Image (cartoon, rainbow, N blue to C red; front, side, top):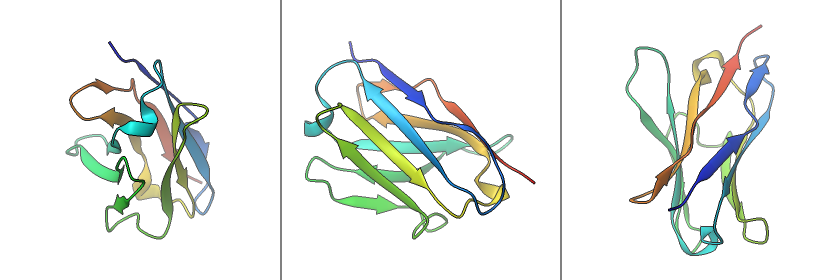
Length: 112
């Protein structure tokens, strides 16, 4: 069993930044693809960012240029750096290792 523990969510003003963290209970992050999803109220869950085992990344058009997914293998942690945040970024953000585990979700609220 693999457990993913998220942190870093909170309330931020438009234009601000947050860094979300997703720590795995086992040392597997370095060898697996990881994705960040988000789900806003009354919206479908959407893929935000993805990083594969070779650290190739992909982003949704809505966040490209503002968000960065990365990993720290020594800490067995994946990050989502979010800059220039907009109110439409407000959602619960989840990390995911496909086929293995989901994080519990962390709330991000962008509001003045």
